[in-house]
Image 1 (cartoon, helix red, strand yellow):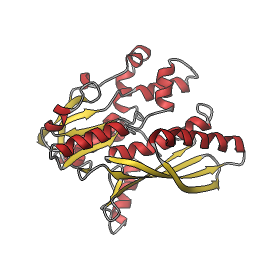
Image 2 (cartoon, one colour):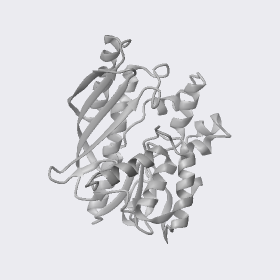
Image 3 (cartoon, one colour):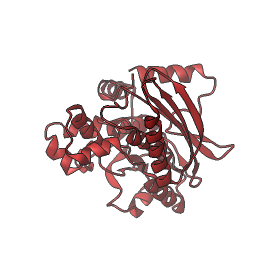
Image 4 (tube, one colour):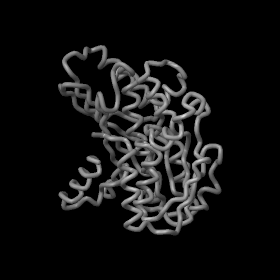
Length: 309
């Protein structure tokens, strides 16, 4: 998989890659978290299935989702927008109307950006936030007996994407899950506050931007322990099951872009969470990942996960 290969090259080339690997980098000197995501026309979206207003909201939300996954309150964004010659001023106006909707919802300010020409539309956003408290959040912090929790349903975005590819407009519920995903800011704050109040110093957390299986794989390999997942306990929209009776299970695990939080939490935290908003899907085992198991997991991951290239 090119993405993993490129990441490996980057880590080996840089003299200090200690800030890489999680959804956000925590800059201790400034006590801020920072992240950047890029959406590329033809890879992450198509202009015949979305409009500028919707695209802008999604672009902001997916970046704020990374801050949520880092346990950080979103504060600022910068926006770099690259546009081809055939894009007119109406697109730009609608795009920034969408930005305004998103930043108003999450109480975020635009702090700059860039405009350039390109052969297709590129949207690159840098998001900056401040951690809610001193609890460390990283993919490698899971430990045996932690409860694996998700903050919502999976597979709906993939179902919505397939409907768009098939030029269908219903069920609208699934299409909207793909076009307008929400950042789980409030649930991130709840997790962080509950951990802090119960004296928990470290939690493992990321978002499911590239799929639930992707998050499970990265959290598991990050801490070095196997996960025991109860697939039947993963929350799934009934509409997805009814619309795609033969495909929904694959969408749930490998679809991507649901942008829910996937967390490995101490039992003390899980017991205090609202079980109608935080869903247990498994636990971290006390069995280490061997080289043989790691090779098998990597192979399956490379075969099924989302391809950015």
